[in-house]
Amino acid sequence: MDNEKKRKERIDRGIKVRSSDVFALTSWREMLYLSAPRLLPVVGLLILSIVLSHYWQRVLLSVSVFALLAISWDILAQSGMVSLGQALFFGTGAYFAGNMNHYLGWPPSVTIPLATIFGGLLCTLFLVPVLRLRGIYFSMVTLVLPLMLVRIIEATRIFGGTEGLSGLSPLPNRWVELYLIIAVLLAALFGFRRLMNSDYGLVLKGINDNDRSVMNAGINIYWFKTQALFIASAIGAFAGAFMTHVYMFVGMPVFALDYSILPIAAAVVGGMGTLAGSMLGAFVLVPLSEILRPLGGLRIVFYGLFLVVFTVAVPEGIFHYIQRKYHQFERWVEVE
Amino acid sequence: MLANTIIYGFVNSVILLLVALGFNLTFGISGVANFAYGALYIMGALLCWVFLNSIGLPYFIAVILAVALTAIAGALMYRFVLLRIRGLVLSEVIATFGIGLALLELFKYMGFIGFEYSLPVICDTSIEIGAVVIDLQRVFIVIIGVTMAGFIWFFTHHTRTGLRFRGIAQEERTALSLGINTDRVAMFSVSFGGAYAAIAAIFILPLGTINVEQGYSVLINALAVCIVGGLGSTGGLVLASFLIGYGQTFTVTYLESHWVMLVPLIAILVILVIRPSGLFGKHKELEERI
Image 1 (cartoon, rainbow over the protein chains, first blue to last red):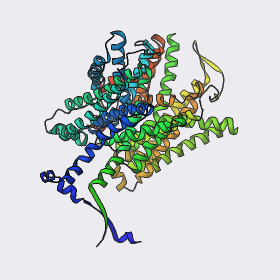
Image 2: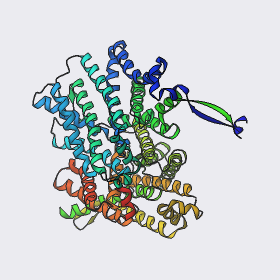
Image 3: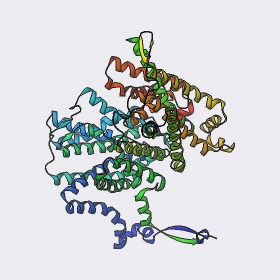
Image 4: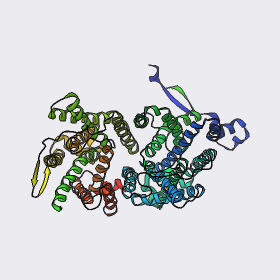
């Protein structure tokens, strides 16, 4: 074989090197090179929101919700906390919004922001006692919590019990729904990407890489982990509160396994550690699951298999692959 | 009433122990948290059901085949999936969780739901202990549980393979340098864990029906017992299963059956506050946990 004497070499594209300093601002081509990846999600989402049919607009809505959950999962994972229970955040936010609307009669414009903050706080409180746990021990607890909350609601029959609360107030119209979630998704994507690249994010990533050395630097890692937890759970709680008002219903299904599995699957398929990858994963998986809908229960089987195949075969995820192709080119070189 | 609770609590504790043994074996030896454990548990039971009812094999052959096949499934899972991502905790958790999810949902899709899916009891009579009537199957479970726990202790302390198991649990690289094939030993530990899951399922599930949803709750119970007991310590495991088992039984008797799910979680939280390394855990485990 020829391959034995050659190896693949990866080199940064010239345009990447040129556009990485201030002179990029002198050339349209290089400015486009820099801005295209950032403009793509913004323009793409706006175009999609206009051209899609009514049914697919609903799909876009749930895609965005799952993308938010996946971003929240990714922030946690980057801070060294692997959650197997995003449904906890989603469900808590959903129940907060539902109860405030049902029992107090507050409109969605009040309940959604309040549910975001208080849902985030409550989830953080739930998880603070186990924050000292590392690795899979933390995952185990997050897996148990949503299942447990469902049982509590079933046992005590609070908040509508098994029937849930229905007839909640909807959002004004479908355009408000759509653009609200798109705006929040884009804000979360760019905002938290920026945050994770700042010094603050560096501390969080450091906790993931080596928590002992971050402690050695005199940083209270538990306080930072608490903050990351609040950020992530507030995002999840917003998604839950939003969906409550879209469906005009809140009940036990909000703690379903779907809301825990799909975000993880999205982050794994899309590529962890960039937030954009997690979002991309949600944009691949959720429409796929819409297409697979005729298969019924078999869909979750496919999610499971996706998780396995991607973690084993493509551990970097789609986003990192695309990013590499965008920034670098490959060529075969002789091995001396 | 109290005697009743004490005896049934004992049985419940042994059930928990039996369920946790396999998970603990895999995790304690190879460090792989097998989140597909619940799926292997249900798979063992369903295989046994298929051999008994669709093929019509005699009971003992069906049991042996089901246990063997589940063990092979565990080994294949290690060989083709876990081997490639060994040591990456996040990937291990996600991949085993994915396998478990796919298997359980596949069983659900294939329609293994309903009352006809139940395994036979070994001997359908009851005996009396004092004033308490107890069916023989529960007595069998206690015997099997004690035997299996004893076997694991004997195996890991007095056989060559068992000593290898403990070797890689203590220090994998040193074990490798002493000529132990760590990959093969780790594969055996996953496979043994699967076999234990199948045995537990085949003896426990005749008390009810084979319910796919149990795959998730079995996993949670096993996790709780392992966290409370301290990993790799059989004594801690026994003590933890008795704590949680009696906790659950007293909850059912004096409170309400809905609250049973809370017992393992409260046990986890309390133990993490008081003794983060688990009841009999060592310092090394403490380092891994916090």
